[in-house]
Amino acid sequence: MNKKKFIAAQLSDSAAIKQKTIETCTDPILRAESLIVASLRNRGKLLFCGNGGSAADAQHLAAELVIRLSHDITRPGLPAISLSTDTSILTAGGNDIGFENVFARQVEALGHPEDVLIAITTSGNSPNIIKAMEMARSKQIKSVVFTGGSGGKCAGLADIPIIVPSDNTQRIQEAHITLGHILLELVERDLFG
Image 1 (cartoon, one colour):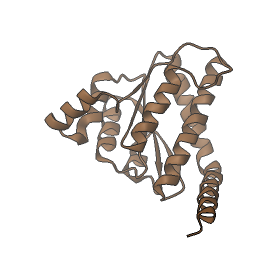
Image 2 (cartoon, rainbow, N blue to C red):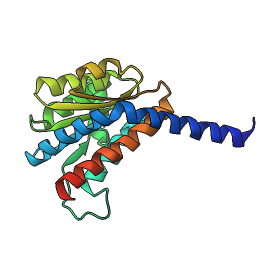
Image 3 (cartoon, rainbow, N blue to C red):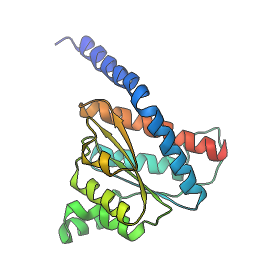
């Protein structure tokens, strides 16, 4: 294998997916930004969830809101919680009520109608994400899902699906964090810019 060609091909593929994402995700990002700004202005909070690499993205994006993303903006911390960070809740939930319920239970306990659930799932079919979105709907909490491919079941449950046009998990994850940064920077600039 020619490693230089491999690297170039991977970067070119990633760039091509991001170019396609401009066409398919711009309008959903703008709708999500409006939803989030309205929630924050109404004293709501953001609840993030995801599994594996998407859990890392959930934590990353929640941190950007609580601390800051844009270094040229001075602002207070914004209320955001990643539901994948509390090992006691995750392990107790996995043991006592099943791993498929760990996020739904937290949405039930922590969520209010003025909040927004932001779910991250490359397939759109993770059972614990589906149940979290169903719980959000039952509590009249709006939801945004970052997903890929066909969007999976989650695309139909979300108020705003943001679907990366790829079936490649790595490319979807790369686009998710880019889109997440763009979304949150828009939120910051709208509220404090």
